[in-house]
Length: 257
Image 1 (cartoon, rainbow, N blue to C red):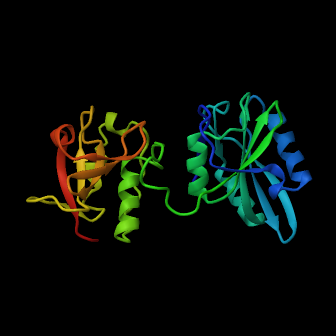
Image 2 (spheres, rainbow, N blue to C red):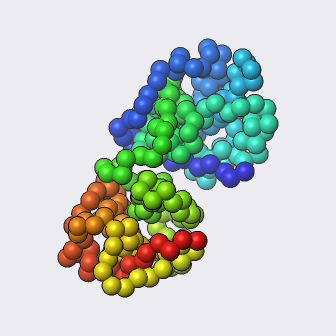
Image 3 (spheres, rainbow, N blue to C red):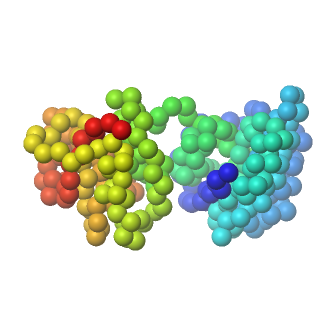
C-alpha cells in the first residue's frame, strides 16, 4: 500500500463543501475532534469506515517528516482499515488554521474520489470536501505538481480527445533541478516518437523553460494554438509561436504502445 502524503498550504478557494452532518454520525465527529486535540500541534489523520450500518473512525499514524505541516497515512494503518470495512472518508486536521481546503487538498480529494473531512484545531470546526467526478476542465485549472501539472494536462487531453490512457509517471517537485530529465526518458515508453515535418493536432511539444533540461510540455491544438499548464499558473491556450517555439526541444507524436 502506497503511503499517502498531503501538504497543508495557504487556504485557497474551496471546491464542493458539505456540512459535517451530511454523512457522519455524532460519535464519529467526536472521535475526530478528540484525535485532533490529542495530536495537536501535529496534524492528525485517519479514515472513516463503514460496515453495513455501522460507522467507525480509525485513527492512523502520521508518518510525515514534518507532521505539523503535512500528513502521511501509515500504509499498515490504511491496509488495516481496508480490511475492517469500506473506507468512506479521509480525515486530517489543520492545526491553527481554518477548515478551508487548499488547492492541494482539493486536488488530492479529486484524485482519491473519496470525501475529505478537514478539522481545524483548536477551533473545533469540521467541514467535508466532496470530490469532483471525472476529469477537471482543461482550461483555468490551478497548478498542483504531480496532479494538475503540465504532464497531467497532456494525459487528460489524450483521455478526453483520443480516448487514450497515457502512463502516469512518478514525479516529485523540482525533478528538473536534479538531472532526472523525465520527459526525455519517458516519452518513448508512453507511446510517442519524434516527428518532423508539419506539426499536427495532438502532437506533444517538449520545451525547456528556465531549466537545465526539458521540463515542460504542451499539446498542439491546431490553428497555431497550444494547450499547456505552466508551473504556478492556471492552465490555458496560447499561441504556439515566438517564446514557446524558441524553447521547444522536441516535438513528438503518439504512435501507440
